Structures are given as C-alpha cells and as structure tokens.
Amino acid sequence: MEAQPSYLPLLRRIVNAECNAEQYLSAWASATPRADVRQVIATVALREGEHTKAFQKRIGELGFDVSIEEAPQTAGRVAIAGATDLTDREKFEKLGLGTPPDTSAPDRWADYFADTSIDIGTGELLGRFISEERDSVRLLAGCYAALCAEEGGPSDSGPMDRIERLLEQLVARLDDAVPVPAASSSTTEAEFRAALRRDGFDDEIRITNYDAGVPGAELHAHEFSARLLVLDGVFILRTEGEPLVLHAGECCNVDAGMRHSESTGDAPARVLAGLKHHC
Ligand SMILES: [Fe+2]
Ligand SMILES: [Fe+2]
Image 1 (tube, rainbow, N blue to C red):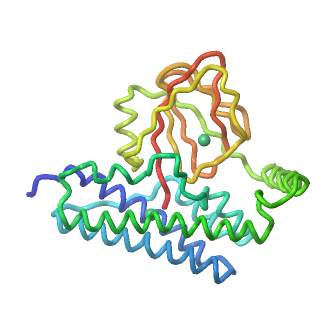
Image 2: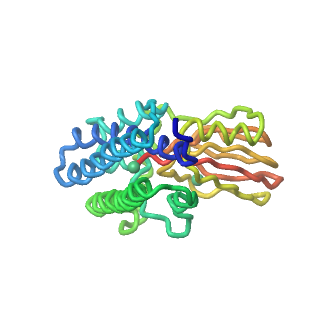
Image 3: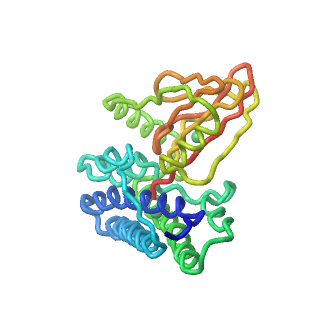
C-alpha cells in the first residue's frame, strides 16, 4: 500500500464539495425558464460534476478511494435551486451566490500549493480546477449583475425603490421560517479544527479580533458557510431573529445565504471561523 499523500484529505474534500454543488446547480439549470441563465448555471454545474469525477479518478490513480457524503445543507439548497416560485435573482440571493470576487480578502485557493509534495499529475489537475473555479465565480457574478440590472439593482435605483424592495423582502421573510443559528459548546480548539476537517470545511481558517462595542453592520450574507468558535471574549451574532450571544468556547454555524452581522458588547472578542464554499 502506498504511503498516504499529505494532500489526500484536500482531494477528498474537493470531491465532496463539487459533488454537492453539482446537485443544486443541476436542479437550478433544469428549473430556470431563462436560456441565458441556464447557459451559465449548466456550464458551472458541468464543471462541478467533471471536477468530482476528475478528482475521484486521481484519488484512484494514487491508490486510494473516496466516499461521497451528502452535506447537511444540500437538500435545502437543491429545494431552493429547483423551486418554481422563486426568480433566478432570488435564488442567487438565497443561495448566497453571485458576489463578485472580493479582492481585499485572501484568495480561498491560494494555500492549495503550500504543500510542496504535490505530484505533477495532481498539481496539473489542481491548477486547472482552481482556474475554472475562479472563472465560475466570475460567470455567476456576471449573471447575477445582469439580472439585477434588468430589475433595477441596488446601485442604480433610487431610495424609494430600495425601501420598496426591502419591504418586499421583509414581507417575504415573514412567511418563511427564519433560520436562526443555535449556539453549542465546543471542547477544545484542536477538536473544533479536527471537526472542520472532518465535515469538509476548506483549509482556509480565519481568526478575527473584534474590539469591544462593535455595533454590527447592516445584515448581510456570504456565499460560503461558516462555523465559528469564540476563542476569547463575547461575540454577538445579529440575525433576523434574536441575537445570538456566544462566549469563549461556544460555537455556531452560519449557513451560506443566512443574513447576519457581527458585533460585540462591552468586551472584545477573538473568533476563529472555518469556511465552506459551495461551488
Ligand atoms: Fe458576515
Ligand atoms: Fe466548485
């Protein structure tokens, strides 16, 4: 039996993330009535599916196997993506997709080649994968921007349009069950990090220091899911429901598309976040 390459867990995480993303993107491509949206979503879905197969194949060539498990959020994301009573723009927003690449944040794939033991075949595959993933982010952002422009997006509409849109969103949300994250206590930081790896989170870990008295910006959503562990102090996650007050050693999940903002009370906080991207 070959010695297990240090990058095998990364390859297995890619297989699982790509397979789960393909499921909801395929459901969306089948459901959309618009040919232009279908063209973009189907292209990205095909890439996700091909990445699943290509990395499964590579793992096999290296002498190992990989099991695919459905992520807990996938069924909900497939339901949103395949819904016939949501517009494509609403699907982008509920799924937390379509955000242009944030050039001020660290590139989420930048660390993939930090492991200098990666073999030539796997390196070649990873290079193509990363380039296609970055292009998929651009394709989705372009599609979402075009839909916003058609409907009158936030950047080119007046304040009354914006208020009207916010009221519509509020009424729509009153009909929905608002998902409120629940706090749970964690044991140690090492165990928390091990659970992130086990549950398919990316290798990117962020540690953020918050000053005391951070009021919390406007509610916003991310295209990635996050799992937070408070390392020190008290961190307050504001949501559309009750704020969640987390003390050192407590953790919670913030799913992609969930509206929230980060704040603190009288004390500063240090928070570790694991991220999981969905396409
Ligand atoms: Fe946030
Ligand atoms: Fe992907």
